Amino acid sequence: MKRLFLLSAFMLVVSSSIFAGGLLTNTNQHVSFLRMIARGASIGIDGVYSNPAGLAFLDDGVYLSLNIQSAYQTRVIDADFALWEGTRRYKGTASAPVIPSFQAAYKKGDWTLSGSFAVTGGGGKASFDSGLPMFDSKIIAMAAQGGAMPEMYTINSAMDGKQFIYGLQLGLTYKVNDWLAVFAGGRMNYVNSGYEGYLDAVMRSDLGGQPLAKIALDCDQTGWGITPVIGADVKFGQWNLGMKYEFMTNVNIENKTKMSYDPNSPALEDALSPYAHGVNTPNDIPALLTAALGYNILPTLRASVEYHYFFDKQARMANISGTTTGKQKALTKGTNEYLAGVEWDVHKKLTVSAGYQTTDYGLSDDFQSDTSFSCDSYSVGLGTAIKFSPKVTLNVAYFWTVYTDYTKTSANYNGLPNLPGKDVYSRTNKVFGAGIDYKF
Image (cartoon, rainbow, N blue to C red; front, side, top):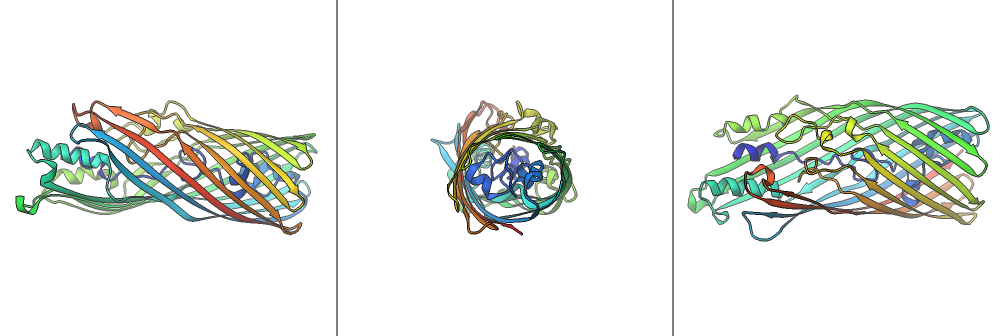
């Protein structure tokens, strides 16, 4: 029983994006996304990420953009288990107070050279200061087998997990004719993840004070991979069609680990083997297909709709706990996103905008766990663009997400035979952003 507990004890991950997008992908690389959301048909500097082929229809010149976003998220598990009374709530917080991104483009004639640097996946640190139900349930079950009741011992645990995927992109756009442009480029991704935590379960001092479990872990994980990107943009009258395909990125992350554990328990070393120094774990970034259609309703009023598909089932992930099966196999499908947005120039110096996005993952009980869960959602963005001059524009926006709770019921809660339980997973998310666009 102790081994089963420890196999799960330090699997805290923040692989799901703290921003908008798929399981591992941030789609909001520019504050214009936060204020309008559907930017896949954009003809602007934010197109370096959202519609790189559309850069061909900019005026000649040099374009620069610097954006700062702040994201805050909570992750809540309401847990019911056969060996405790009532529902217990476990709350984790994830924050990314300063997430910068930078875009640049140089347009000359039919050619445009563009590049960007951004946090393209992950982007935050998750902290669970009072453990997780998977920990408490297994300790309680283990102690109960030895005749110990919960009031006879104490459990202290805390864990932090982080994941950042830094992306450096470079690409070239070519204007084929007055209505067609194409793009080819690539993004170098560097993954930096880490886990820090401890667990200390001991009997009360008046009952001997012997340990039930004791672990401390400090694990950093790094890896890298290249994402080829292609795109096309078609302009016809007041319509604009933007398309992009990001190929799957093969990534393996390697452990750099310091750990300690109770030497009187030989099962501990084997239980922590996934986090041993030098071990490699697959962490592929899924391929992504986007298509967006924009329409100029009036010279001052624009709208667009967009679709994203993430090929999650084809991207290798870490194994499901206790098995040799990658978590991607437990997904029922890839992620579908549907986006819409509108912006209105209320004044020659002021634009207001709003957008909507719904995200539909292919979730399943085998994919979800206390340490890594996602929830279907919808998001709303509001914001403004202030044109200080023909060269300088300030974008300001607020973006929030409403999640659908996911309920996981099990007859063998957290792998404990014949002990039923239920987890209700929920999340909240909000993002603030401000950015400056400059044209030389």
